[in-house]
Amino acid sequence: MAKRTAEGEPIIIKKYANRRLYNTDTSSYITLDDLAKMVRENIDFHVLDAKTGDDITHTILTQIIVEEESHGSQMLPVSFLRDLISMYGNSMQAMMPSYLEASMANLRKNREQLQAAFAKGMENNPLAKMAEANFKMMQNAAEAFIPGRNKPDQDKRGSGQSDELAQMREQMAAMQKKLDEMSK
Image 1 (tube, rainbow, N blue to C red):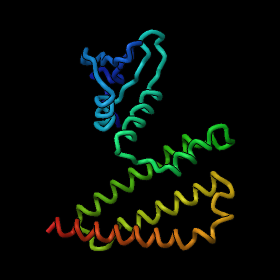
Image 2 (image 1 turned 90 degrees about the horizontal axis):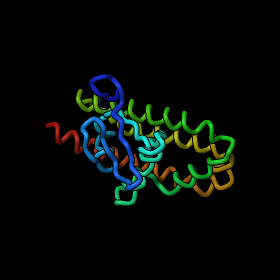
Image 3 (image 1 turned 30 degrees about the horizontal axis):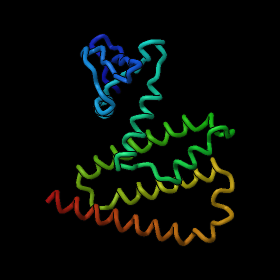
Image 4 (image 1 turned 60 degrees about the horizontal axis):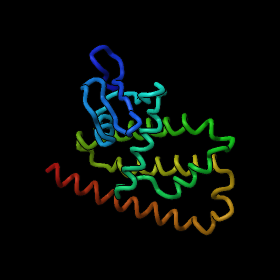
């Protein structure tokens, strides 16, 4: 659950025409980096256009992602970005927000389970199982949301996917080994 102000309300950030962001809770100007830090600290906020009062939180959060991606810490693969863009105007567009939210909730849940498993010092490799499950879920979702995406060229890519999966398993096993060594 996101942290809120003492009154239980989200912090209001005002964006002025000069592109400056003003935190009304601390009465200070802040940057996009400060907002990114607030997100990471799970602090709830809304960004409002100072002139019109419109809620522009979505736009500002998107801008933070663009900034992060442009500074070399790329997390979103080009293929994902292309698929996402192709959803705009598509009949599936209305379903995407709830699907992406559910996917992120599942990822957070898996991350928490993984952390708990490592804390308990489990011998088997839960990371590889979760990665495989997530890979299958994303592959099925891509096929469901983009009809025919993997059908025509599945034969060409089938061995590449199994090679990719094998490579991921090797990487996960190596990570598990390092974590096991660190816990000794």
